[in-house]
Image (cartoon, rainbow, N blue to C red; front, side, top):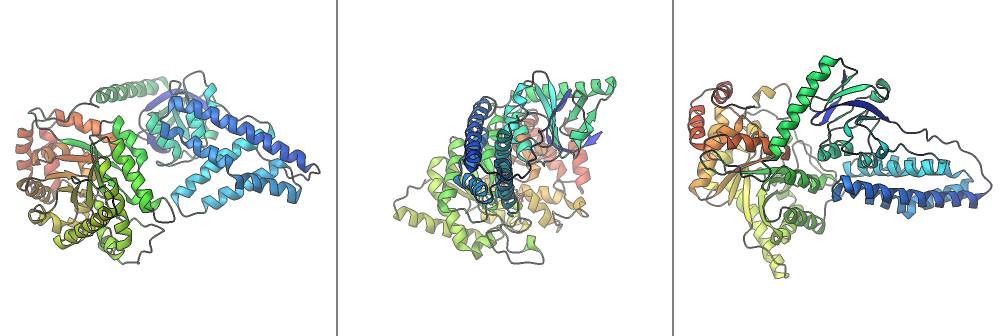
Length: 570
Ligand code: PEP
Ligand code: MG
């Protein structure tokens, strides 16, 4: 058994197809005919451009416009005059062969981008590698393997799958893939999930461990690959695969359905996102909106801070894509375990208890105000709800809101149109705010409970620490009591209460939260349909009784046992 990282759910059973690159190593040779080498470069560039256009064409049939846009990025890399002129200079100045010059210049660019301390630029390195490999193959007269030519069901085995490889995969024939390298957020993993192809990445040496034609069983959830297993095991996995497919198809029927309990109570199931690219999954899984847009990822993508205009474009696109459905955008939550290159963070003994989120925004008001302006300008494009993180006191909320209103006034004075119906709310993730929710509820438009932090601060247990993870107790009656108080305070003041911590997506939590009266559940898009199915099988009235009983329990274990006894959860 080969163990890797499960990157895309599902089970694949098919023969191995090794997608292994030809040897593109080049020798350095001196040349006399500079013009000849330059002409070869020009020709190879033209051929490469034509190929990229053809791949994009094929990709747009299999992938979304956004995914196919990767190839626009590739076309741009190829068209970058810097790349061409550096190769030409090398040929002219050093009198070396075009293959060598191309290889050296590409390596230099890749190294430069890879060494940048920034996920965005690291990804650009992958694009450059991909394009220059194709260019080099064309210079050397070699052809790259062409997954578009696969004609039977296969599990693709590769070192990594570049975006152009993945785009050429015929979804009807490629049952799954396994790679040597990669992680859950690598390009290949993201594409696999959006294509719903089971995948296991980071299998280290799978291209050596597997031969073409070997029988492969791949479990994308567990992250394992079995090579030439016996018939009994194949049958066992075939049954699992069929059950998974049936379950998924069943769930897909609920994409356009409401989330309503058996006694007619409606709740909203919305999604947590970190970027625009997550929106496709929100739609595919029937998300009724966005319950948490973690905007800090915008700030992590580059070495400099995103400008007001850049942010405006992103918020506008998210609102427009959600077509009038609610979109809760959380203002910058940096600090704790999240740092960004562009902001100089003080070193603190306990960063989770230090200058984090709204506290940092107050220390760096220009950064905060830039984000507020971008949000306000986007407010006319949909149903915007602005949410402040890590609020502990009412003064903090008032101060943040006052800054928002100041920016609104100055934008209006400058002639910008601002919606008059956007909402302003807070995350409830600090126990002080939960306990004082009745006071907050008079002034905010909504609450969203962030259980990831609420649990860490209630139990005084660092969420990053492994040794005390037994104190991650979202089902402890202490948390349930806080959540109950928050929901009741909201409702008493005609406001709504949601939850965007991981707890909202946990099947065991659905009965309790429904019973406690939670209005909105925000979770990763892939959890939405199973939570919808579960909630549609529950009676709100019965869950109220269950929640009341849970609140009489002493421990998390007892609460969990009670829910498991009363509710059938698959
Ligand atoms: C939370 O704390 O529950 C939450 C949703 O925010 P984050 O995980 O980003 O801190
Ligand atoms: Mg939080």
